[in-house]
Amino acid sequence: MLLEDFKDFLVKYRTSWNSLNSKRMLAHHSKDLEVRWAGPETIVSDWGFDEAEHG
Image (cartoon, rainbow, N blue to C red; front, side, top):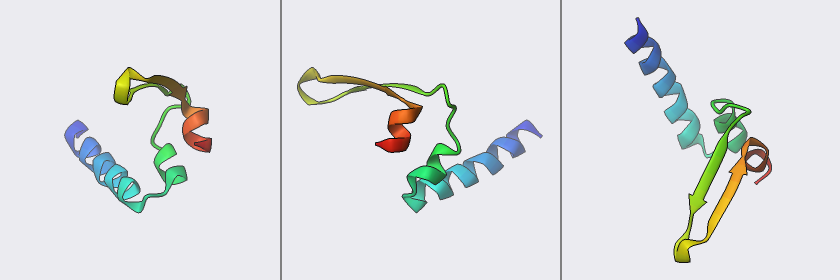
């Protein structure tokens, strides 16, 4: 049952991802989201759910 639940979630997640709709994608993320992004030239940025929502 757990595997079937995950597969169902994955289908919904991929559909949201492919929709290119950020609000739809955020429905799958925790309000406690914390991200560290390392860009070119070692520029690091930290952000969370609020920045993802308004980014």
